[in-house]
Length: 70
Image: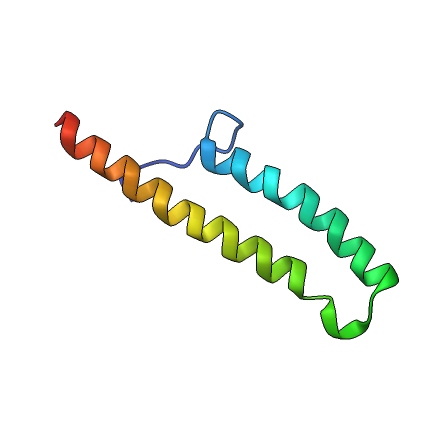
């Protein structure tokens, strides 16, 4: 918890979240409006899966770069 979280577009994780959230919301609204009730959760599931996989690899890469610079 030594690292503070910056909630701005300077933070790459916040930018990626927004880049994924906006299309997900649009696709979700379209699926809810035109689709069946059984498939409403799929855009949200895809969004969280992609975001957290990307975040895992991003943080791992950043941690390796910090170790090299130390």
